[in-house]
Amino acid sequence: NAGVTQTPKFRVLKTGQSMTLLCAQDMNHEYMYWYRQDPGMGLRLIHYSVGEGTTAKGEVPDGYNVSRLKKQNFLLGLESAAPSQTSVYFCASSYSRGGNHQPQHFGDGTRLSIL
Amino acid sequence: QQQVKQSPQSLIVQKGGISIINCAYENTAFDYFPWYQQFPGKGPALLIAIRPDVSEKKEGRFTISFNKSAKQFSLHIMDSQPGDSATYFCAASMLGQGGKLIFGQGTELSVKP
Image 1 (cartoon, helix red, strand yellow):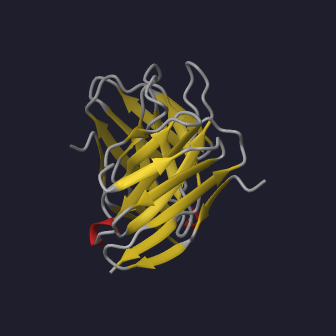
Image 2 (spheres, rainbow over the protein chains, first blue to last red):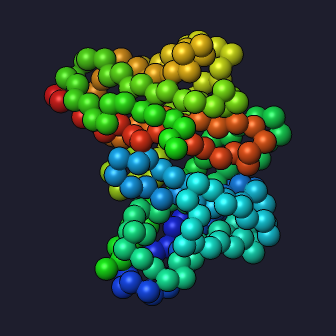
Image 3 (cartoon, one colour):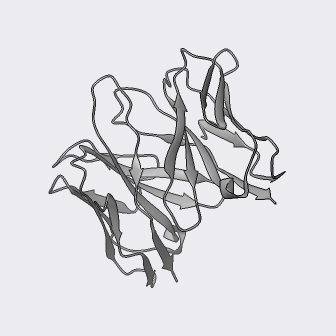
């Protein structure tokens, strides 16, 4: 039972390059999220999805795109990487239970450096 | 605009002492306040959570105190242990928003033996 798996774990990019971060969950969760973690700023929501084929913007969506073609996968794309996008990226997922909050389950992060 | 403010940024406590981390929120529509614990190199994991209809929730050595009128809540770790050394995040959420969490800035706790 892997939970939430993020690929890759580390990556170094040059400014202007593009890349895709992959998140996969095996818990049949409806909701999935992408956060970035920066020192002194906590975790900030980039984009999220409430179901297959749906996505929505979070607090800091600029410069990122996402897709959820399959329920178990949530992809985060950087079309033209900028140094300001150097961060640790976390994916999370949770159940959807009408009227009840559910815990989010996090992956172990992708450490991305943009030179 | 930081909707959830957390303090202190870092905290050093002696083994056996009490660790206290504070959070304040702005939006009165929030109805769920979890705390997440994160160890180095790992993702955050849910530690304990509270709803605004109760003033306190205790799970083992961890207690959340909630003050609705002041829009503040805090995490108390009793008998702190070196294994509690981690980064702690408070968060807030409201129903009907896709389960989105608004996180505080985080507190790095170090428990000295």
